[in-house]
Image (cartoon, rainbow, N blue to C red; front, side, top):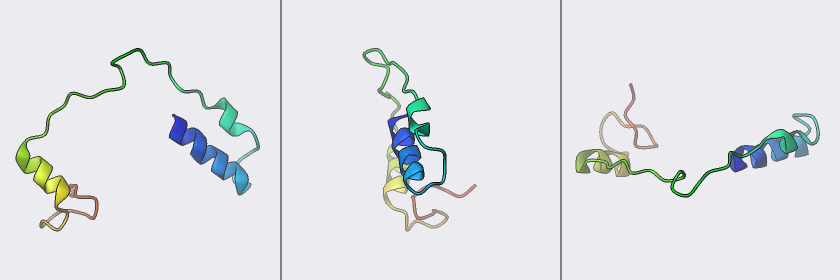
Length: 65
């Protein structure tokens, strides 16, 4: 949420949204361990992400669907 708040603050700076809108973006309160992931990638998927030049992959390394 903090990234969204910073983005909204930037939008305010270019008059794209009403002023002080960023103050309405509230970050969730997280307990210890809630802001982590324990998902493991298999090695083929990791290589695919790290090597965007593979056929069928976009610039971000993810496969087009």
